[in-house]
Image 1 (cartoon, rainbow, N blue to C red):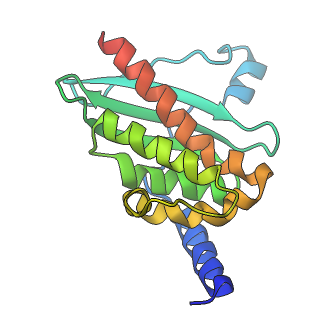
Image 2 (cartoon, one colour):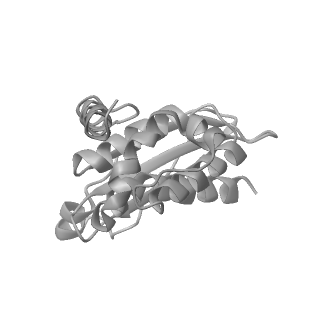
Length: 181
């Protein structure tokens, strides 16, 4: 397959994932409208887990460059190893941010926190590759559909869009683990 054919296929995967996102639910408070009404201050939230044996964490991420935003909610099993039992998100933005969130859910839900952090590191490495991709076939295989963002890494302004959800995942996992401690 030619480079342009591969890039076109990657664009199609991104568009499809953004049109039919996995893990997207409507649960986040619209911070802008709530703050304007005076009903809630920005960042104030009550986070609960749907599963009794899980700790929940939530993180709101905002990209001021383009206006993308996402709230990532994770529930992590209290036992060892810490397994991601539930991962959902709410938000809006460009097709890159929405597709990245969708693919991230598919990759990490049901995995351990350590496995999710390894994928987080691999995805960051991919985003720093400036379009060259990863030199490690195992990392590329582990990233699955997320390798379609290789082309995005050529454009510094778009990298933040792809990383938005992943940063939310990392922060929400840290919050859930802190709640469990």
